[in-house]
Image (cartoon, rainbow over all chains, first blue to last red):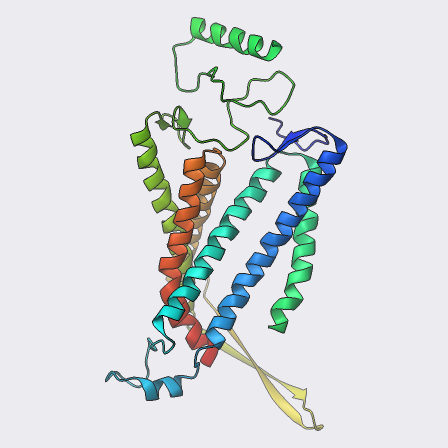
Length: 143
Length: 190
């Protein structure tokens, strides 16, 4: 394994069947890696937006929640109770955990792809990261 | 094939001169050569499932049986869970320790030509305070564990990679539950 960046048309990426040995194959692989990085950036933003939306759907003001608390705690509640149905909150949080797993796995896959030290693949990752961030950031502020 | 001949001569030389060690290059058929330059590569470059002769991070930590692989799976799973918990614990500690709040007011023109006072709130810590030192120590631990997890994933072993992913997901699920309920609600309201 080389430990410096090099240009080459031959690489084996991640799996045994992903064996590239032609310029067309290398261009296609770089494009796939670019799309994978765009997906990674959009998952990062999607998770933040999903958390934001799930919190916005809850009654957010402490005054409203103080009216709804049945417990005889002090007025300055440190742990405001969740007033949405627990099952819905559980499903929402479970979905976010699955998204988190996907983000972790894709992040590691991209790291392993860059570890091949193939410059075309690395450029695909850099461009995909730029494109993904560029596309995802305005969508975050819209929601 | 010239590659296998090259492999055999290397292994013969090593057995005659050195005592067998764990770093001895093996002639397993499951090794995949990524390049054609004839170098002997001990690292896998594609994903595989196996539990024989799996080196894990440190010298002498080699997995040879299914039982050891199961133990390594559990260990890696717990390490990934601990990493997620550490991330969230650091966030909570940071929030709790931000006691010094500086207000900075500046006049800005309002909508009707009036002048409004816009107040900026900045939170900060002293550099030599105990919370900041604790944050630094935890940051170092977090960086080291994240690199360990990266190196574990770099072994390309399917079982260990699944352990990392599952541990991260479970840790996020368990530790971020309370955080999302407690902390972000207070942020939303104030």
